[in-house]
Amino acid sequence: MFVFDDVISPYASTNEVFKRLLTFSDYENKNTPWYEKMNLLDIMRQTGYKTLWLSNQDKESFYRNSQDLLMQRADKGIYERSGAFDGALLDTYNKNKSFLDNKNFVIFHLMGSHPNYQDRYPAKDKIFQTKDIDLKNFHFGFFGKEKDIQIIDDYINSIAYTDEVLKNIFELFDDRDAIIFYLSDHAQDIFQSRHSVGHACTKYGVEIPFLIYVTKTFIQKHPEKIKMIKNALHKPFMTDDFIESFLPLVGIETQDNVASKNIFSPDFDEKRKRIFCDNMNYDGKR
Image (tube, rainbow, N blue to C red; front, side):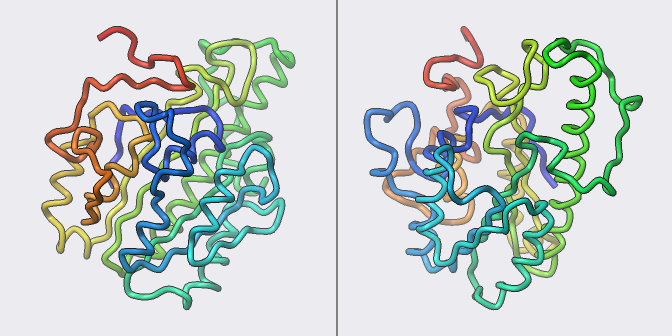
């Protein structure tokens, strides 16, 4: 497993992130509507991949219309039943894997740690207690300190549950030549920059996990790709250019690809300004 340590999202909400994450839209070409840019689902289908999108986020939502539109570009898209935990997607995958072929592109869109955090993991899977949490440097007082601490407790346990779900997803593909990318669409500001919690256009609200898991077969067959991944782990990156990096790594080149936006390329521009939420410079002056 390869874990990147300096990655942010371009926005702090699912709808805005998906407009950039899976298309060639980014802030440098913001004057072109995102839906006029080529998207990852169409590219994968056109290059011979079966595409399957499994989602545990709500189907009908004003805040997720870009997700819905992109999901419609997949060969098959399935929404999980409302209120299900993310682990339910594993069963849904197993019920639909016969649909897949030799070349497959599968998206597991988790609910993850969206509020309300206590609803994101089964009570029986609770691992951490309040006593396990370092409570320094939090801005308590929004709901009252006791309630605020419980929110942090639930948030951390929701992340632990996501870890377990990811482990189970990885195991689904362990016998294949597979590469799995995991990233959050955005983060949550948990009393870190202010006396509130949830989606926020702050640095805490866009600092996200990004990792790549590869199977043993993939390692054996693609040593040059492993080297490229290792060389990219500490580069500063914003996921509006995810598509620019993903496609070349899996061997797909398009006329839209720009090497300076590909984190796995030696020509990657590490000094690119990371402008998030339209006008906020994550790195400040360089």
